Length: 290
Image (cartoon, rainbow, N blue to C red):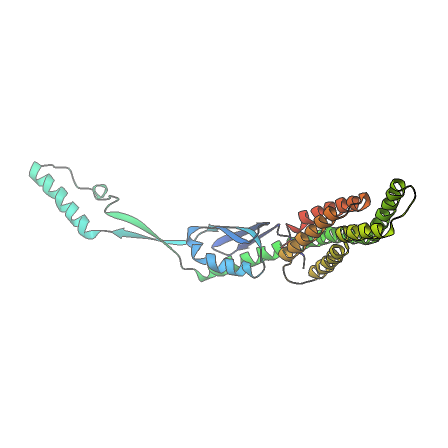
């Protein structure tokens, strides 16, 4: 199945205490690469979110943004170092007594950061975790729908190029025997001109046989047609097909280059140029297919 690696999905979940928003962006990449950005209190869920998204996304650069707002995300607790506070109180009292200081000791004198602090702990909220996973899955669903819709358009474009490519390859097969015949006719004319109209048939047959062997492109054309058939079958698979299509396309390009180097004919050379142009257009699309 042709699925684009480019897409966007967003979901928002609200409860009485908090609001969660998950956004997922994907672009093309050779492998599957996750980049997660989320609040510190949700970092323990990173692996779960990756596993959930990995069920739907097989390849690409995946950027996940999780934001959360509301109360109930953390609990706060006042911590007092009573032992140190007792020493601090006795120390101040001793100073006042020693130096006969009459000012009363106030609570402000005892509130120090090193004595009294506020400890914040992440609230272990199972409901919060469920909402995050639910939002991530819904955002991934929207992302998948977008990627599939774009993939459908990409498949149409690739198939149109593949149809033209198949026609060009058929023309190559038609041109191949004509090249040898044209070479024979040119060779006979040159020999006639050189030998005053006499034909050296054995020499012509030898020269033509050597040329036909060097310029024979039937093997390459056959492989090129086979690759086209494999390409069409691959497009029908339900699994991710991007890498396989890219490999087949490389093999097509290799055969086209060989044909261009072997064929000593302007018509075949022109067809090879058109074929390589079609392959390049297909490559641009395939590089963005999952």
